[in-house]
Image (cartoon, rainbow, N blue to C red; front, side, top):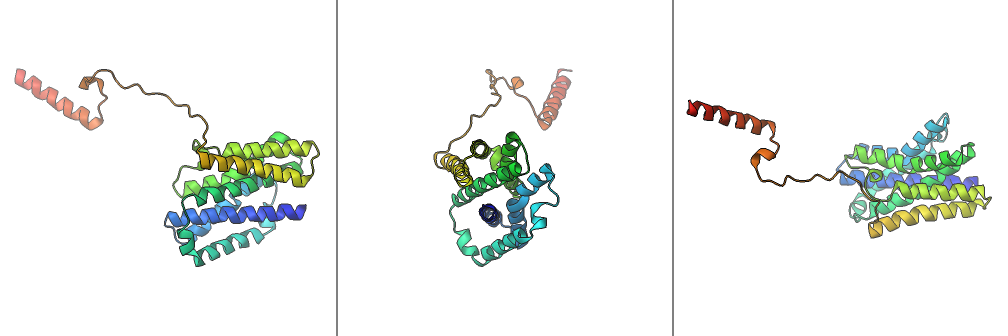
Length: 238
């Protein structure tokens, strides 16, 4: 099964790197920008996970194949740029959902393999799935998906919990992986299709009931103008 886990990890890197390339194209970045977004999306989450778990060196330093896979993904994307540019707006969230599911499984599996508790394993799975996308969105000057009112990190957490529970029950690894992938991917795709979202809690600003201008807060320029008017009125009275 170690081979299956490895190839799942590679598949996740490819999918996430492709999502980085697509966002770079839509943000009108040059090839270097595409490579940077592809790299941080493909290996960013796993790098943070390894650093938190104390794994030295991190996985892509031990196995540079990950870097070559990202470079190959970017090169292929450059050749087929026109096809990528024509992809629908819905392709990026779907590709991101597949990467999220794959990386959630990888992160949870690796944390358990290193002897972490179930709670830590769930958090590491979620971090592996969402951290790279967060860095990608920040570099592209977008609000990260995990910070929007969409079901994103929640889906990763649910998939990680399923993995930890089934692993604790001694369920075969193939079934555990399949169930975790299905839960994470299913929740995320359902959220995309039906626009499912968590409730948003925010302070409600009550507008003033009166239309009196004095009740409306004035900006600095407005305050200066009002002061000039008051001085003029006082001079006229004199």
